[in-house]
Length: 222
Ligand SMILES: [Zn+2]
Image (cartoon, rainbow, N blue to C red):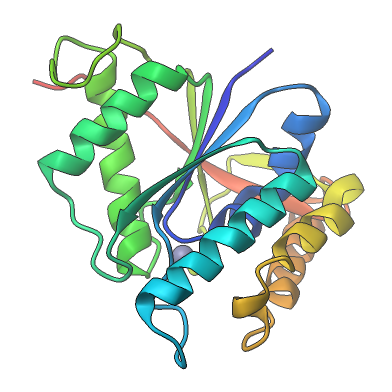
């Protein structure tokens, strides 16, 4: 059994970026935790930010329940203004030491959306620190994440060292993503995800639909 942790800048990123791979983990019996850095309250007009945050958290719970994910953590950072700061690092180190994931999924470093790029930086630094004698305010024993895989949402990767054939889970992935109705009503993210996964399948030759990842290595902090 391997414990899986996913960092999503906004609700729905986990399904677009690595939903098929998550479904494969769930099918194998690997427990999955999703950490939402923001609740996506800037993702639409016509209602208050508080109301939209509630809607998007409910959609995230609905999609997770549909897929068999029980453990969701909402950090409630401001959508669009996620900060690379110490308080967020302390929170992430605490989560890493508590969940003790074997595999961590995060956005890749070159993602164009600022919240995605900051999410990458925060989790890489937190992963480096969680394994050593730092952040005593984050309880728990040190934990070194085994594998960090970086997914693509807004900006395609230029090199894809890790390829996952998700063909058998593509319909389920799209069904989970479509639970995020507040977002898909305006923009067909499901079509974008299917097109990217199909493109990856064709260009890698590893399956009809594939998710691709960069592999993050950690340098020892000084
Ligand atoms: Zn996002």
